Amino acid sequence: MPPSFRATPDTTVSHESDRLFAKPLAQPQDFVFNEDVVRVFPDMIKRSVPGYPTIVENIGVLAAQFAQPNTHLYDLGCSLGAVTQALRRHVRADNCQVIAVDNSAAMVERCREYLHGQDSMFQELLPVEVVEADILKLQFQPTSLVALNFTLQFIPREQRPALLANIRQALVPGGALILSEKLRFEDEQEQDLLTDLHIAFKRANGYSELEIAQKRSAIENVMKPDSLETHRQRLLDAGFTKVLPWFQCLNFASLIALP
Ligand SMILES: Nc1ncnc2c1ncn2[C@@H]1O[C@H](C[S@+](CC[C@H]([NH3+])C(=O)[O-])CC(=O)[O-])[C@@H](O)[C@H]1O
Ligand SMILES: O=C(O)C(=O)Cc1ccccc1
Image (cartoon, rainbow, N blue to C red; front, side):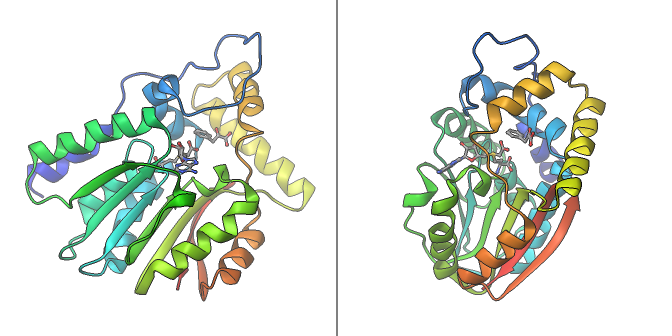
């Protein structure tokens, strides 16, 4: 493997560890993707989402199978561009362009630094445009690969069907949507067990009980997970013909939806 491909994965490594919820907070506030979160984000998501590094890398591998020449590839809710970087490591289709979109100005600013930094260091990378926008307002270009990697859960539930229908309309034959989400379980006992196991995962990654509790209260009004069955039915209703789960670790899963 040429050195350029060994070097790229490290560009999102933040050396700051996530202590955002370590001290007791006087006023519980809703979670926002601001500068403080941006600074610790790679550490936060890796220690909070079981399977995250595997999912990101393999979105690149899967994308390489679906990417069609002369189309756009979308990384929706790109944060710091981890998925876009995986696309750059794996996709070899001709004349593809990545559109990475996020509505957090702080995320977009750092994401541009990382990705444009790669542009200046390495040749022959997939071209990337990083756009600060609401993914609900995008006009999609013909696309062969759309990644919603832990983003749909932050979209108000009533807006999710229209977003998925827009994506479905823009997908070319042979393309795919890759949708990763935290799952909710309809069975109360399953939900409680998976929640406990996820807390154990966070604890094993160095989070204290206080950090876990404060993060949960910050995120609960903002992030609304659905069940696998709800996802499957909503994707079919949006016009997708097949929904294939390809990864699950505890209550975090990733699906391939085919047009
Ligand atoms: N309406 C919206 N429009 C655009 N962006 C949005 C919107 N709502 C939320 N976001 C953005 O969606 C991202 C969700 S994080 C995705 C991780 C990334 N995909 C990764 O693979 O590292 C998931 C998490 O933090 O759990 C944030 O950057 C939000 O600003
Ligand atoms: O599900 C959770 O409890 C999380 O912490 C997921 C998460 C990870 C990173 C940012 C926001 C939510």
